[in-house]
Image 1 (cartoon, rainbow, N blue to C red):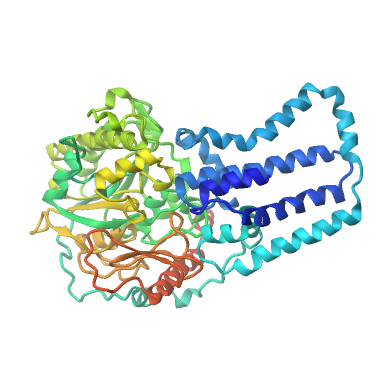
Image 2: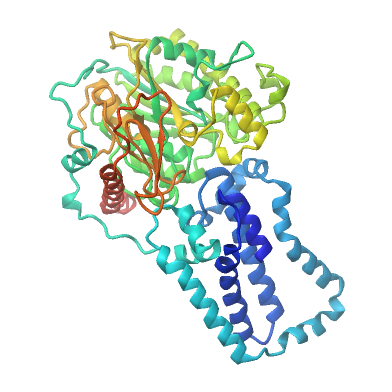
Length: 604
C-alpha cells in the first residue's frame, strides 16, 4: 500500500512523494487492517483482499481523474462513473501502462489462490488465527491518532489538492465522504440582483450600448467542442488551422479574454451555464445536481418574447441526464441521436457535417414560421481523444506532431472548422444568416496540461512561444455575429466567461433580464469582471481583469498568474475579490437549491 501511495503521489502532487507520505497514508491503511483483525475471524483473507482492492481502486481513480481534470476525485464524482462507458476512449488514452502496476499484488495473489485452490483452506486457517488483541487495539489507537493529526488541522484549506497532500489521499477521501453535509444556504429573500451586482462591482448602464440592435432576429448559439483560443489565427508550417472561424473573428465581435466555467459535466455543464447564467454546483455535474429544478433560463426568457426554442446534439439525450436539463431550462424540443442517426459516425454519434446539414434543414422550417427562434447547436466531432477517422484528416502536420495528443487535437479541430464552414455557407444560402444573431464559443479546454507528456508540452511551447499555462488552458474563444452592429470586426479585450453569454445576447435582442436572477454581465457594456472558478481549479480560485488567482489554503498562500496580453496596472487579484468570488458561488448554490422542483409541479 505504501508503494501504491508513492505512485499516486508522484502523479498527482507537484513535489511528488516524500518520507511524509508514509505518515499520511499508512495510518489509514493500518486502521482498516486493524479493524479486520479485531472484528473478523471467518473470511478474514477475503476482507483483506477486498479492502486492498478498494483502497487500490481509490488511488487508481485519483490518478486517472487527475490526468484529465487536474483535481482530486471524490465519491461525488465516482457516483457518476456510469458516464465513463461513453468516454472510454478518452479514459484509455490517458492510461500510462505503468499505472496498472498499482494492481500487481491484487492480480498475483488472486492468481495464486486460483492455482492453489486446494491450499486455500490452509491459508484461511492461517489468517483466521487471532492476533494479539492488545497489540491490535494499541496499533489502531495510534493510527487513529495519526489520521486525526493529519486531518483536523487541514480542514480549512480551500485548495482540494493542497488539502489532499496535507491530509493524505486516503484520509482526504474519507474526510470528503463524512464531511459532505450541505453548507448553510443563504436565505432566499437575501439573494437579489442588487447584491450580486454589488459583489461583482458592476452597475448596468441606464442606456446600454447595442440594446435591441438585433431585436426580432433569430438567435443561433454554436458550442464548439474542446475549442481553445490559441487556435485562432494559428498556422503550422504555413497551414491555417481554423480558416473559417478566423474569418468570423475578423468580420465580427471577438472576445479574446474569454474563459470556461465548467466542471465534471464538461460539455453539459457549458450548456447549463450558458442557458442559466449561474455557476456549476460544488460537487457533481449540473445536469445531475440541478436538472430537477425550475431554472430561470434563456429559453424561458425568449419564449416569453415569442421565440420558438430547440437544441441539437448528435449524442443520446440520456448522456449526462440532458433530457432532464432540457426540461428544466425549458427548451420546446430537442434533437438528439434518435433524429441524427448513426450516419457518418464519429465518437458518440453522427459527424459535425451531418449535425450541421440536418440542423440547417430544420432551421429552414423554423425560419418559415412567423415567430423567431433560438437554437443551441452542440458540435462533437473534435472530442477527446481526437482520433477522428483518417478520411476526415484535412491537413498533414509536420512529423513532430505525429502520434501526439497535440497533433490529434489540431487535426480534429481543423476538421471541425471545415464542417463549420459548410454550415455557415448553408445558412447564408438559405437566408438564415443575415436574419440571425450567431454566437460561437468553446465549451471547455481540449489540452489539459496534466495530460501532456514532455514532448507534447514542448509542442505547446512552440505554438505559444512560451510555456503553456493554466490560464492559457482555460482560455476559449467567443465570437458574436450581429447584423445590427454597425462596428463589426472589433476586438474586445475585457474579461468574460460563459456565465456572461445570457445577459450579453439578451441585450442585443432587446430583452430585459432585470427580473431574472443572473450572475453574468453584458460584455458589450462592462469592462470590469470577476469570474469564480470551480473544479478544474481549486475552490477559491478566480479570474480578475488582469490575473488568474489559484487559491492555496486560503488567499495569503495562493498564487497569482497574469493573463497573457494584459497590461498590468498593478491591480492584481485582491483579498476582497477572493471573498467576493466565494460569496458569489454561495449565492448561486443557495439560489438554485431554493428553486422549486419542476417534476413536482408537473405531477400536480
